[in-house]
Length: 71
Image (cartoon, rainbow, N blue to C red; front, side, top):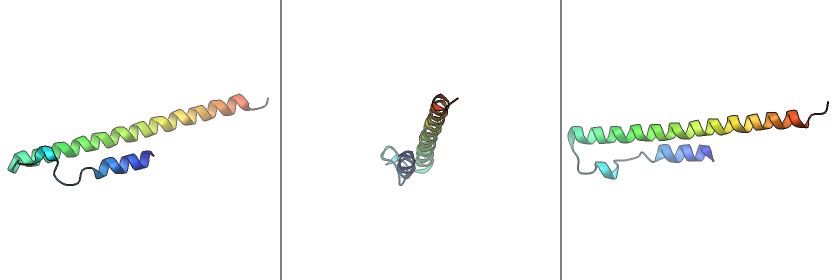
């Protein structure tokens, strides 16, 4: 699920965004660069959430294994 989310987020960068239409020169370049930075931050947040969920699931598994072992 997270992999699909990352791919969809990264693929949404293609082309010129609607907010940048009608701009030329440096304004167009700045707008496109800002869009790319926003996409990078978004994908980074998704990957961070993915890592946090993995850590929580791993910790839950360890607690479960320790609680269910025989002494």
